[in-house]
Length: 147
Image 1: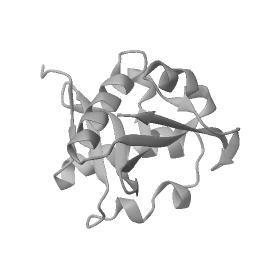
Image 2: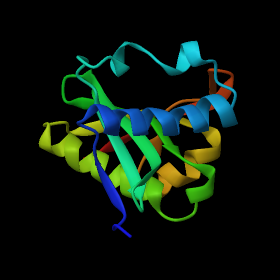
Image 3: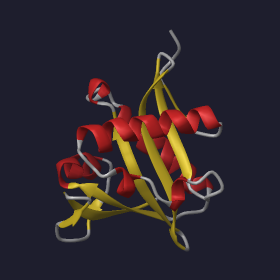
Image 4: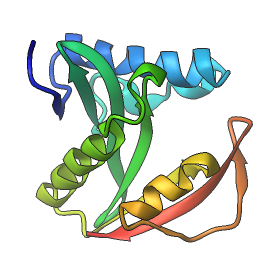
């Protein structure tokens, strides 16, 4: 069995794995409309960086990083399959994403986290910077972290 792995999704297959996790979590599990889940940052020629987490060769997590404004990256589409939750995949995804963000010269990150995940992000050093708002029918808050 291969080691737990989180990496930048470079190949078409790795991107497909990341997108499959996002579909399972956001569309199938949480009921987000597919038209809202996929956007221009998912296009193959977009500047966004996609991440995929794999356990035993099977995809279990995904995340996306893109430039939000000069020096600031935006964390998006962080997802872990229900069957893999509680195993540290979210933390590993965020560590890989933050490392990549530093390499790309970002000095801070912003994200729109579901309120149910707010405590998870607080544990990683993110601070809530907004009141609750609706995004895709799900309560969210904006959070930020300096790198």
